[in-house]
Image (cartoon, rainbow, N blue to C red; front, side):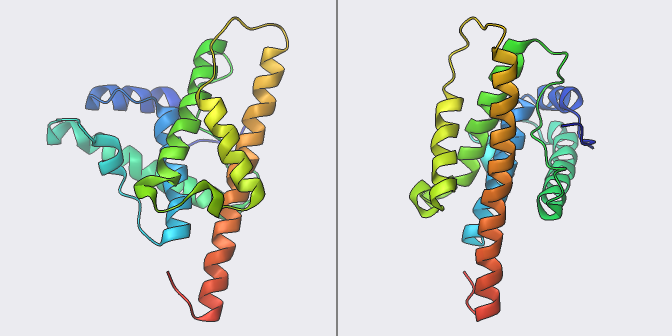
Length: 190
């Protein structure tokens, strides 16, 4: 998947480090995607700063570049999810990065997505469609991945799992968006 990313993994990693956060760009992007889906279900706007900065005591001046990147990444992600033209991609390290880093980043991405999706316990996995619930449970497994030694098939398996998660997140978003549209059309709002 070679869609153009406005926010690049390495640059965002530097921004997170400069802000003093110990989160990976993948985890933050997953959190953003999960929060967007949570908002579709609950109507509550994502509170990314609360989710990202819980327990962190950071000076305000270190947060300005981070806030700019978060807003840019949020807008980019929402736009790509709404477009549904296959341009939505997970923010992960480049293919040139080592396989262990890429695998850990995918695990982090899934962990972040679940944190955002299930924020404030306002959604339960079983409230999703059967396919959405299965994907969420699979993401739990991916987030707990064992970084054991890999073999020649691991790269292919990784690509398949990454694509499964990418498409699954798009489907969860579309299902939740369809519910919102249905509620709006019927006059019911969350």
